[in-house]
Length: 120
Image (cartoon, rainbow, N blue to C red; front, side):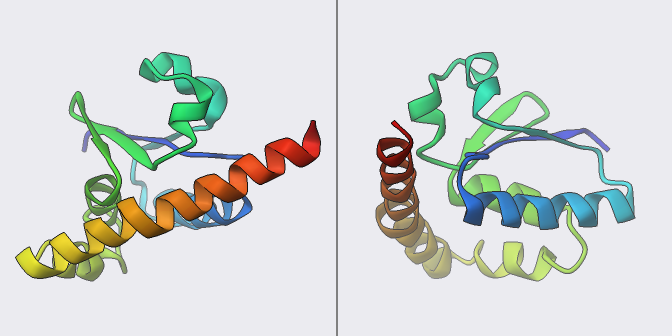
């Protein structure tokens, strides 16, 4: 099975916990998974700020972002395949993608920016 590579905002406590749970499942099941944090953004052709704005994966040379990135990961994780299937349904996919792009991702990015301002 091709290694799935993840790029996520490792400074986000919510994102980090979620990705850590995926990593535990991958370890248990032998799923080849590489997890990159924001320091790897240049390897992905992104700056840190852009990388912090959305969840991304690379699989078979293709890079996916947002809901499609989550679905590519969920399809490979036991216990999560059902969610990949449900979010692949036409109406559900549209709504879930809209929710991620316009609600979840911007909210998490706003929290990221707030943490950066406090740290500065």
